[in-house]
Image 1 (cartoon, rainbow, N blue to C red):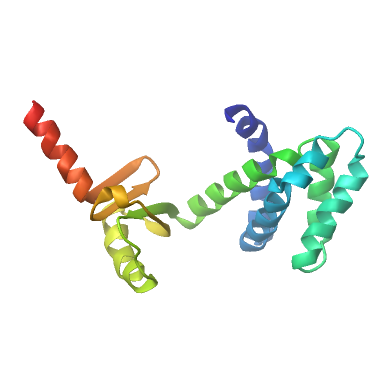
Image 2: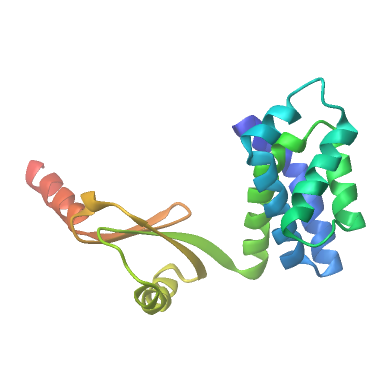
Length: 181
């Protein structure tokens, strides 16, 4: 995993520079996310690793898969896919997309936050919670929500390497640690 991210990094950085210079960060983020989704498909992934599938076939496969749900592939996107194909790097598209999204968020001053709740929370509750979390973490946040009944109650929020644990499980664990020492 770490090795693939290391190999993917120069492609993601170059793509980010091109997207930033052209003012198309959002557009490129969408395109590279779709390409990553295509590359993540098990059948496509098998084709990428198959020596019997020629590079031009892979490029056409990506173009066709992209076009099926979107507009036609533009010249820049086609060149990007061709470059990755020429260098046998199509399989790195998920890593390239993740890194690109990381760079985009850093440019926009946002971070990804994972809200883990003991119970399902609706969109209104999340929207009400975001300003409070942004004040705590001192950054703009994009959130995802997950459910973990083991928390018993409350929430746990993870932003990068920081964690805010206001769950019942977290408080019980803290009490157990305090009592044991």
